[in-house]
Amino acid sequence: MTTPVKCEECDGRGWKIVTRRGHVATSFLGGAVSSQEDCLYCDGPEPIVEMFEWEVFTSEGVERLGPCGTSSGQATAMDELRKALRRMEPQPALWGRVTRRVYDFGLAPGDWSREVIFHATVDLAGSVRFERQEP
Image 1 (cartoon, rainbow, N blue to C red):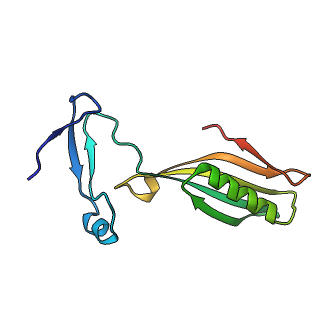
Image 2 (cartoon, helix red, strand yellow):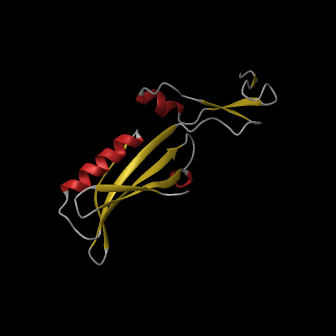
Image 3 (spheres, one colour):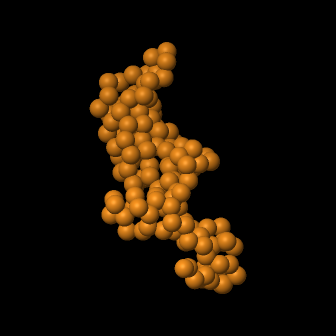
């Protein structure tokens, strides 16, 4: 049986509920957290996992996906994108992007938030230029 727990973030105005989705799978995979506590009053807990995806695109009449990857750090994703763009042969329509993705516990993949935060291009001198994308 579960005992109700008052939330400390909202000074006890809300009660926490415990979600135990994926408990068997999490324990099998050795996950440290097997349940998540959500307050019924607050906005909820912080996002569980934040990842940064980087992708290279070439446009030869049709947009094609080139090298891509993912990282837990924004700076690492930008560095990997920069290296990938420099390794490719110079093309007039070569570009890339860094996307921030938030994976939340218990949500379907379509509900995960995704936003493009940087757009990268290669200039004539071979330098990679990043432009921040507004949300």
